[in-house]
Length: 201
Image 1 (spheres, rainbow, N blue to C red):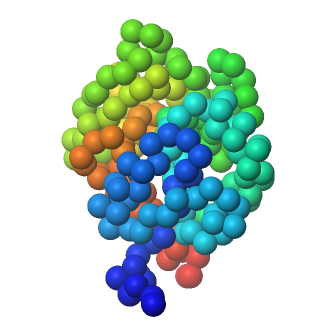
Image 2: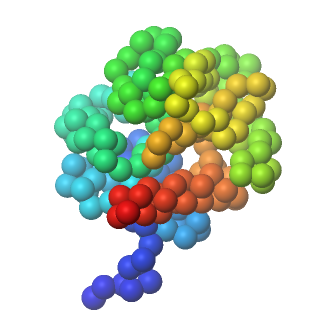
Image 3: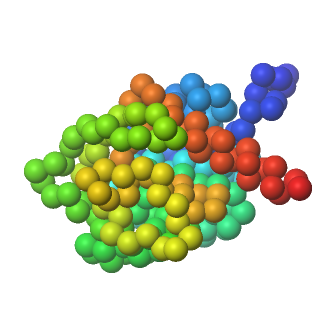
């Protein structure tokens, strides 16, 4: 039986190989979309957009290789929106430093891994997104060192971009799923519907 409540909702996949994908699923549902855990290329085909959660980017790359998901992800990103948080942001950036590693290169960014250093491995800060103050949880966060001309900065912390978008894609260097506010996930859901409207136009 078809659930008509979800009929008009965006169906957002959450890459469920590593990281707190369950918290992302809850945040997506709270923000008004349908969340689906994605572990295979087949499951990837069934969603309108994808969230790549935090975790450890080198481990995630290995898991993507084991599951033969790297190429399907690249192809998915050429067509549909992806939102990467923390390690997900590293995977979406064009250039990765400390050390260099493979990435999907979907946003014109240079990202340095673990750049805040040990003293602020974890902290909670207040940032402004879409005119609303929201909490940002940083856990061994990467730093965006360079933003390309096509990239829009949506939020900054300590003078550095922490939430950016380019075209249909978006990255955060913090963990929006670990707070009670859904501002960041809601912004991504709005992007998905805008992107879908453009495709239909």
